[in-house]
Amino acid sequence: MNPLYRAAAALLAVTALSGCAVYADGYSYRTGYERSQEVPSGHLPPPGECRIWYPERPDGQQPPPGDCDELRYQVPPGARLIRG
Picture: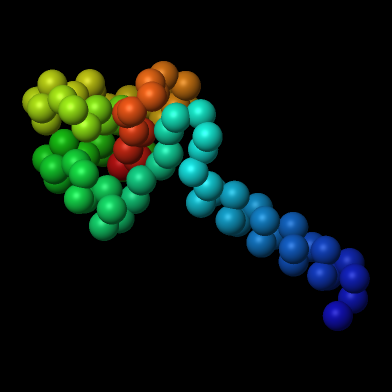
């Protein structure tokens, strides 16, 4: 395989997998089965939005959904950012 194609394939793989990272600054994006275990389905954010979820709070006292790009900087320790 041509070295240029190999480098391009490696760059593509790294770029694709970078979206699967758990971030070290206190938040992570949760999807699928794992998300449904933590957040009742009636409280999941709409597609394209996120919600800060506090595990110690009752479901009805969770903050409203909002823009993922804004909320990702507001997640305190112990809370999670849930993507809809």
